[in-house]
Length: 390
Image (cartoon, rainbow, N blue to C red; front, side, top):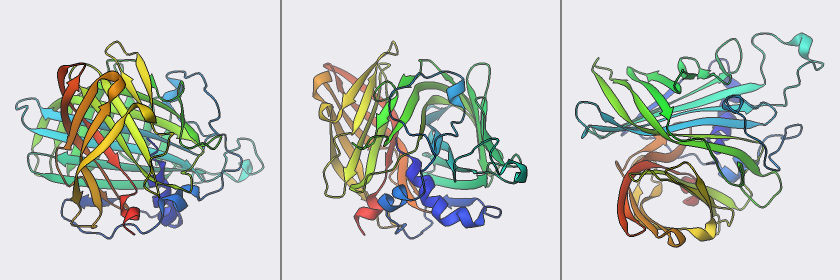
């Protein structure tokens, strides 16, 4: 979904220390104050003049669209997944690895400032989050990095996206994901069993009624995943599971009346996938541009409007570190598809407390689809709840 708000919030605080910004880490139980800045303010900050906007559907071309789109101000490569031990499937884990790109100003090759460029000059900033849910130990850890897109520190091509030693690299069968922080490391290979899903209107995903306030958005919704986890004590674990990729690029912002969003990516055991997001307004209503997609076993997809689904909150959880109150259990209903699911977090505390706070974590669900029982796993992202209490 519209993950760029996190990048903008962090950039407000970190742009001034680009050459010395160090990784930030978090583990479950560390307290930090919630970010007091407004999401709406952050989303509307920055000069967008000179950048291209997403105004109408466009052809998607692969592998080119796996790479950067510098004519747009912001984009991201967003992986989440649920894993299990190869030797003991009851040992389960969740992960998030996300790399963002943000342009400070339009890049104009051959422009007047070309002669003044050096390996250390760049208008591109890269920002990344790595989070890990260790369910057997009931521990959650998260880290972030920020770097300029210069001198090899960070960058993006169709075959590789990286920030220091965190990277997403193309392989003959898919992509390899690597991240490590404080002795905890993740090394995964992901391979898609379905074609790319073009979200929204053939890949154009409106975020408000304003023209150009949209992104180009595609997903890979069923990524077979295998690899290795390593812990600070030297132990390692072979794992397998399913991952999900969201790719978006845009020059857009939250509208002034939008507060945040709830985003669901769910992989059903009947080979369907479901993506839903609802944009929440400050007055408590849901923005009608909220949307989703139901992906079928053959890879075909059904776009969903806000009127096609209902998300009902069944429970809440309050963070002991930030005092933010988040939804913590949901009923999802799609009457037109005869689909009802109850979704629960695999672990309550999956709140990222870095330069700012939000909740993103592994979930499980069960329910009925066309009178047949279904279950599965996925990820949920919740933003704007710390602002709602301020």
